[in-house]
Length: 112
Image (cartoon, rainbow, N blue to C red; front, side):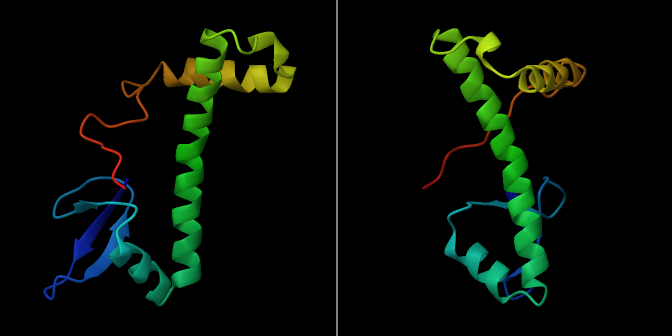
């Protein structure tokens, strides 16, 4: 998710990738967010930060898709190359150390 700060004129002033005080969650499909990113003075850097964060989020989605495919016997875990198996197992073991195992926040909705 992306969270924004607004200025006194109610325009987007800054974006963040975690909730915090005085931050407002914004839909990824909000045209004002895209406009802010496009017109920002550090637009290229900001675009890269947003893409990097979305890439991290997509990795988790892909992991979940792999789990679903394995659960439905569409693929076997052993069908995956050894390095992929090792990375998945290691990430799961590390993730289990965290209290946050879900990729979706309880209040997060898909907004189109």
